[in-house]
Image (cartoon, rainbow, N blue to C red; front, top):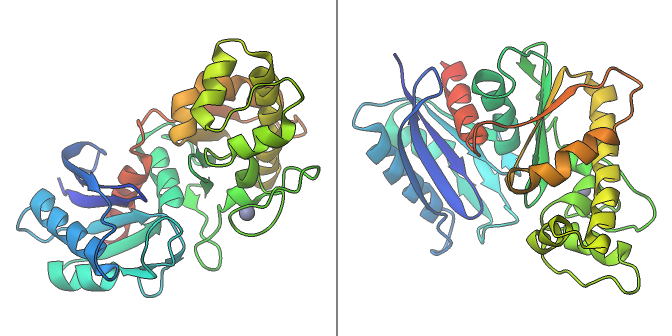
Length: 299
Ligand SMILES: [Zn+2]
């Protein structure tokens, strides 16, 4: 059975794993994403060393999932918002050093591939993968195929417009996008504009959920407002792609599914049949397993 090496390059940590065809992780290494050194070679070199340790001496296909922006033509991460480098070259230096195929894929698109092959989307050829963590991203599988678009950017769903009252500006520079309100980074900012006189002040996302769980009325009312926007976004995805299933993932969903999923589904429109909305069973490994799928497809 052929095994491949999968890499998930995140803003805070890098995960490297040896993965078999059934999506089983046979070996795994996790380390903090390098932030020192003069350029992105610090990251490339650390990944190369880990791939050699995890993959062993034999050349194997390598799949790398990374947060964008990606330049898929040259195989690099360019101007990453969460890392102090203008550019991280991956495909060129790694394929040269390892002597095998190296494939780069956006991490949210990889998540869709991972769910489709090994997770909540298994056996379902029309699904939308949604990840809500620091930002909001996604990937669309339609008729069994991952939608790419012109530059591999189909699925940038965090930049769907869901609101018009507050004008909060998203990380992309435009106002009223889903990510600008409902991502882990931006929920406290959304709370600040929804907060009424007498409501407590909250400055961190976990604080808001903890307060809601304890029954604090301001936090509970706010999570209803969050469900309205999440419901609008999932309704937009439903009419755009007619999925059978929407898979929710990401750190915010994993930690707060009980307070997020039910209220969101309740707010979804029913113009088309409502897709099944489920949470990822892969414990945060969907992008990693999807990187392995991408590596294998390349062969
Ligand atoms: Zn945006």
